[in-house]
Image 1: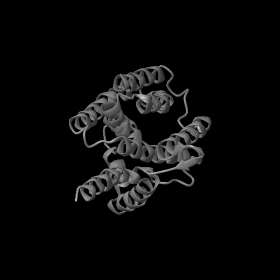
Image 2 (image 1 turned 180 degrees about the vertical axis):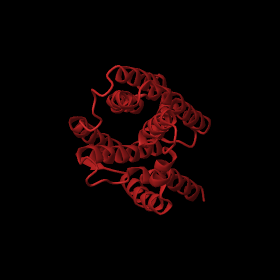
Image 3 (image 1 turned 90 degrees about the vertical axis):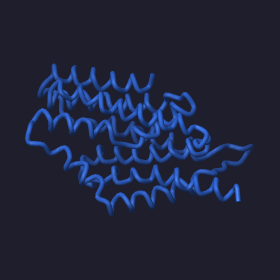
Image 4 (image 1 turned 90 degrees about the horizontal axis):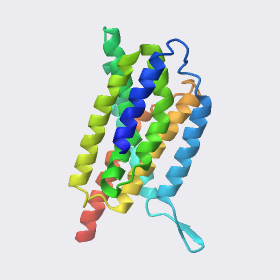
Length: 230
């Protein structure tokens, strides 16, 4: 349901935006960016902290922070964001618009943690959050590039289905703690997406370089599970 809703959001947003060519400005989303940052903070704390009696405890914070630091460093060394940006530079205008939209909607923390949460816990919350984030930008992209933006929903949904399928097949590996850590990491990446929007790129942080953090979360949990069995 969440994957279908996200694809439909991009399709309808791109189509509606194409009807308002040159009337939408992709930069006029500072109010939305504040909302993204607030929701990201709430989601982060919700997934790393638990209330036990009168105490607030966290089993997830250390792993999430270490994963974030290591993943971000690896992402910077690999120049992930720069390389992905180069993929969107095509000579054909329509192809360029399609690639730009696919990269924008298909790369991010919620794009990974959302399908995982759906497959493991049958929880669509992060995918619905992605709909909320993607909707105005689908309209803006549609206004700038036309109906071709709607086609980006196909590869975005295909990636989500693939991630969900992998998570479902290996659901025994995805404990509640691991899923919470993945969600928290996704919210960190989303937070900096909002930050980049609110600063209009003036103090841009390459949040796409943070994507390896998600894989470090899985790696650390795998190592811990092996250590516990020894």
